[in-house]
Length: 194
Ligand code: SAH
Image 1: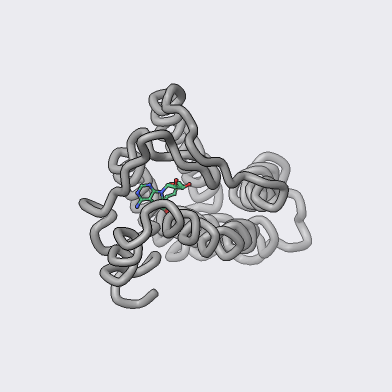
Image 2: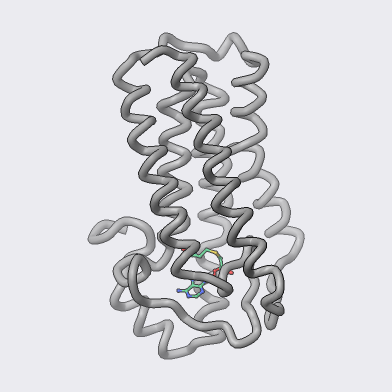
């Protein structure tokens, strides 16, 4: 595995993610929004996450900036990154398929929103966030640069920890005991651990 192939894999991950998301976003375009908790804080967190997972690493792939943060690439980290990137895309596709029209990019609920608790959502409450964590770790493995590589973990970490509690509160407010029961049966992002 060469650094160039690793960088190419990262670009493929971004494109793969975009293709999956675009298709599902198109399908849920007409599902009306019933409850909207999107606010300034949420928009800032989304922007931070987008920068960390997308803008900064792509800038690095395209321009090699910032060079001072480069470190020596090891083939093994590249292969590990490839595996994680593939896993992230599979999981991402599964979660989008399971959520269907109930998905939205931010803290919103659709009209006639259905609580999904089966399939990939059976044991984990936030498998789509698990997929983004896998992306962020894949990015750290694929890009041998302390800044661009770790920007994903910092960027998505900010969104995750800044949002997940609010999202669960929104679900509790809407689905009450159903979601409380669901919470008692599931882990947040890693089965048996967290
Ligand atoms: N946190 C989930 C979903 C991310 S998309 C995951 O990581 O897989 C964010 C939106 O999905 C939220 O605004 C909420 O409306 C919706 N959502 C989250 N969990 C859900 C569930 N179990 N069933 C249906 N919709 C859900």
